[in-house]
Image (cartoon, rainbow, N blue to C red; front, side, top):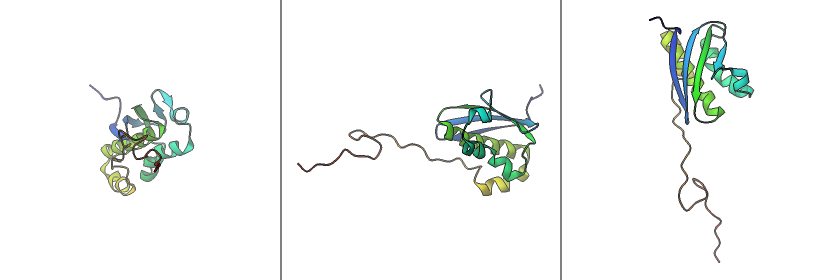
Length: 131
């Protein structure tokens, strides 16, 4: 069976998981069946997604098809960048040095701290009154 894609990578950030399929093309990015400009409205999020291509000088060489679930838009953009970086690494190992230097291959471990009982949030406390 012939694979319809060149490379695959899974990216994660916060609660988001991005399954990224990459094939040679014109630089089109499709997220959950919609173009990236339509899915990620903010320019900063679109910039985050394209950072892996900028670092490796592969802008406009690959089409990306991504299935992202969980979390918010910021976490999803970070997960997509992580997935694209992993997929590029599987394509060619020469991309490892620039991606590693930029920190795109490392999974960001930061998560939201859970809310504790007896408090209004994770760390916030109710107002203290002596009387």
